Image 1 (cartoon, rainbow, N blue to C red):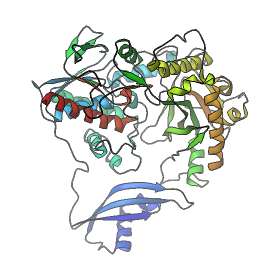
Image 2 (image 1 turned 90 degrees about the horizontal axis):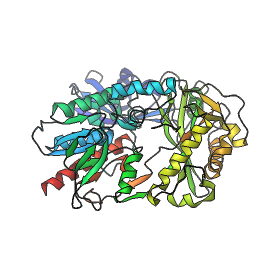
Image 3 (image 1 turned 180 degrees about the horizontal axis):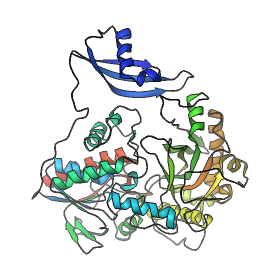
Image 4 (image 1 turned 90 degrees about the vertical axis):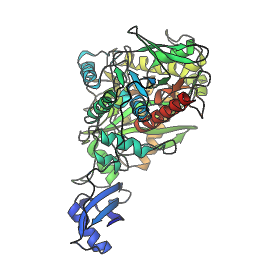
Length: 529
């Protein structure tokens, strides 16, 4: 017999199956001789009070053993000789689109401008050593997309758009820990995710699909308002309906679409900085105790949000026990992002701290940055241009290298230059810089007031032990490729299916995976018509 129970226990009990069994025996009256196993189904931490509890949903196995697999596998059959679909991009949107195509009996052909996930890692290591960025192989471009080396967090609020549990189960089937099916905020870890991505690629290849690395889409093939395939930088042409899953940093694609009359629109983004605290300090603040996390709790997370002058100011992509990394996708840029290994064991915790920015805000004088490369662009590309200008300004402040400008948090609020900087996880190095002075006032003033509000909410958070590192601009795509709500095809071009974060329809690994599956289903329906 199998029974499910809700438990609320202290962390020490939650960490031990034997103590959980004892808890079930004492609280639920189960027979200890008949209780053969306990499996945790859902787990979340309640740290709102001084006594910390772990809320659990557990499955008790009575006089029987649990099934071997803790996840639901998906069956992938061979699709050699089946109709072909071109998938542009091997990030989560593209990979999950390809796997779903195989389920539906279609043959995916993936083209990825960057390198495979192992070779890509070598280029990432060179950014700190050589202070330069390979424009085709970096933290944004390559197998796995921007998510492969930016933490692997799997939390999403987009639960109405598709089957989130299916996405998590596919990750487990390809090597992710089954803990992602349990935790309220699941996380694979940047050290584990590359292997999972490799396994997903191998499944696609074993089933008869194709994956072409270092192959950049340079143009769509369009005939009579219908997309029939793509042209690439290698001279190869690939034919079939196109799922366009390029990620949020493929600015050359956006420029091509705009120049060739493919309908896109400017959309809101959020920009700001990476904020880094000592991990132990965040543990102390969030767990309300001097010893911090102790032996049975994970590195603490936080989430802050407020409104300042009609725009949101909030934390984004929080990385407990993590690192800040250089996420530029080309020369003359500084962009920062965060990641965490699976154990979340570094000395630092960081998050993006960003200000909401809408297309109409670009008319604000405080956001106009007038320097030589500020040429006139189409209205749909103006938000992207603003990103580029801010990233170039940051690069200039960082001595035109990947050394990033930084300022202590309390100094920023007080508008003081930081004469020294604390240790940081950012490997290429830092230079002290007055972010309060050169960030656009629209952003700097809202960040300052947001920090003061968060400091009142959470005592000790506003401190000079924390470090601001500029700039965080790639929170989402600056454009949306307009598609039909029902068919998921582009509003004018049949056979083109804009997909995932780069198309403006997702905001992270899981939501991009969900959208990839939806686009694959839409392609199948299109071909069946």
